Amino acid sequence: MTGPASVVLDNEAVQALGAVTHPKHRRVLALIEVVNQRNQGRRRATTVLVPVAVRVEAGWDRSAPGAALANRLARARDVVLDGVAADRASQLRAAAGVSVVDATVSQVAEAAPSPTVILTSDVADMGHLAAAVGGEVRVVRV
Amino acid sequence: MAARERDLFRWLDRLDQDDESVVTSVRQPAALREALRVACELGMDATVNDATVRAVRDRLETFAQRLALEAHYAEHPEARPSLADIALAAAELDSDPLADDPVLLRRAAGEVVRVKPDATADDVLIWAAALRSARASA
Image 1 (tube, rainbow over the protein chains, first blue to last red):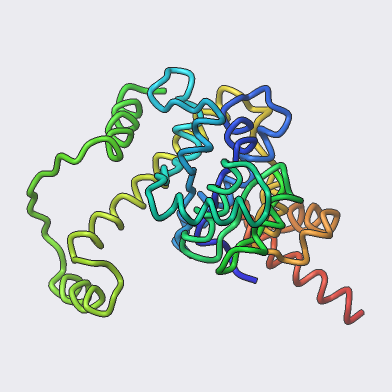
Image 2 (tube, chains in turn orange, blue):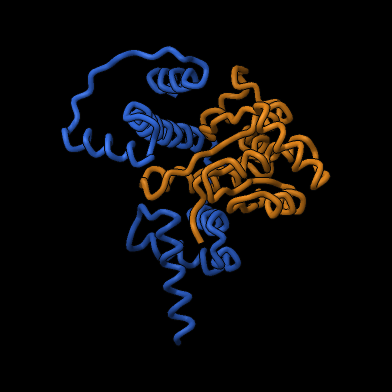
């Protein structure tokens, strides 16, 4: 039972964080608050990550004026998809039969400093993927 | 949001878009410098410079995120999660069994702020674990 070193956002986590009217906005803020409180206390550094494919799916253009809320609240770091990562995501997609974006989320979770938590609304599919990847990857519903 | 806060976010936004770097001189304790050098040899980071930049960036990001959260709550007070909500989120992130007992977490959140008004989610988890332990041994 250890706090996560990495938190990976999926599409709905991004949507919920960036829109005050989203029904899960407060819930995602509670999860971000944990990261902030722990980083302030320097108990253990937790990094929030967002795969670039999730940004595309969520329409999160960091340079757009409407993205300021998500940019500032999440302080999430982009994880780019290079050739090696694309190979691994392709393998995960073929093995689990999930979407391209979900495959990149699991690939990022696998490669990130462990333990890793994926914040998602799709606990069933992502849980299946989390079990398939290496390292300690857990799934938390937003 | 105040002008200086906007400046801070503008510079932080450039961190991932901008490879420009500057040489700077930082006065630091000699022992810290040596400890950093040895830690990097042991694998903490590739170089002392990487370790220093990462540490400073982590602090800045956390500080800026706190400013952003408080500015957001000032504008949208209804968006602020309660301490019990945050404690529940912490338990879930940790796979702590306390996540299955939100009633206990709410009680712990209510009690802990009486002795520690600035309690964090982790304070609530410790308090809740103590309550659970006391309940088990009663």
